[in-house]
Image (cartoon, rainbow, N blue to C red; front, top):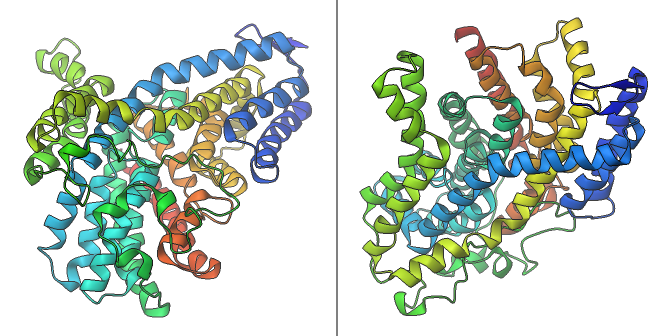
Length: 499
């Protein structure tokens, strides 16, 4: 036995540490995909297997796991909660629908794919992927029918915009956890992520959407397009072309559903479920972008001024701090997306509070992933991988991407893939400069999106909404995800040559 720096005893046998890592990850994979156990429990049990095989005492396993659990909750949980509250206001006020209709109504048929990709990317900043899908896709299908465009030509760009933001951009859970695990600069990750998002959305969205729509025809799902679009943005369990709750038997992610109870505050709404007054377009876009702009401003000032004593940098360090930026965005949203549409204080409170129960599941998964990551570190496995990567002169950016790809293919969960991969490659970040650590976060995020297939809840969600067969979903959605992942990696490597 040997003693790790944190005081945790573990085996000194390198082969046994490798076996422990493989068995721990395999336990998580089997429990999720075969036994259909919730990822939260699977990560707990996988951590126990990893620790025991690595020679860590049961007491130290509990201590290590709870330490990682608490640290991750403290660093990530607040941001996820604030982001969900902003998303709840955006959804319930009709702000998201306002953005969609305003932009789509202003473009012609040729510009629709580009407009839908841009709209999805904008809406996808504060909304979780599943919520973005149930909100946006029914509108996409209506737009496709009214403009007589192929469904995939309009739909793929929207899905690409949502997926890219989900994998690359904070405050989404995966990037946040990777930032915390690798001790990366959030503003720098945000800046680089937005740069990478542009080519990823363009290539996987309008470009691929145009190509695949010419080779594969998907009928307009009548069950969706015949219904009013806003009413379809309630819960995905009330939609889907087959009435099957929009998910297949291999659902392994969290059903975030709709952030609030759609029956609440009925006096504030019209018959179609939207508020009596609609939020202003400019105010809605400003509210969505405000936290991002504040965090970007902080990163830009740090890069250009780089003087902690500078007055401007002191101000931007506070305003651009992620919790502060999101809190400011939430407070502004209470007025622009709450008071402005006629919501009273009680209705605003119900909306922001109602967003929290829906994210409880994903918060627990993220926190358990943090505990699993801590076991990887304390058991010596992460250090072993770091030594191997350095000795082999292997690029940490490519290694992070490959590890995330492997876990994504096995579990189907982008969040689990990001959490686990970030924990495995965390020791590599210690010797890297700040820009490279930020790019490592994005490499892991890109790998977590690789080839969504039948063990991913998003796969079944897209399949049901578009009324496609499994083969058609693989040829469209799965290939689109793979394009995003590969373009993301290429972009990371190109940026690494520049910064």
